[in-house]
Image (cartoon, rainbow, N blue to C red):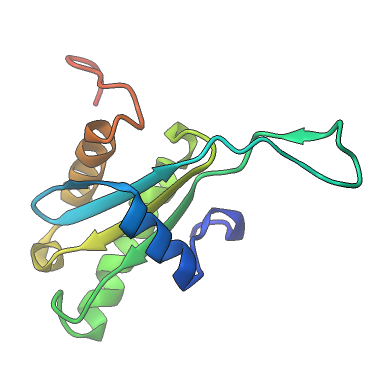
Length: 133
């Protein structure tokens, strides 16, 4: 399960990421991303800079993917995949992961490969050619 601070929940955030962000399509999912380097200072303590806004992730799994059982299974797998990779994403990144109909029959490993390929294509992590990934 994703920590509350790592979840994208408001519809305004989803709209902002999908409309203004970059996207990378893979066979089973599409990843939209916005990276903002926020150095927000609080008005109470202007010396306390906060540049460690954690990456946040939201998921869209429509009825085109399948019935509710299938959609929830896909969403659970995507949450697990994204949660395992939160530490590799830059601070201030907001992602929206949209599942496509082929995701219904995909394994967690296949979804993980698509997710990794999409975030590499978006240049959110280093492209390890010949590395572990």
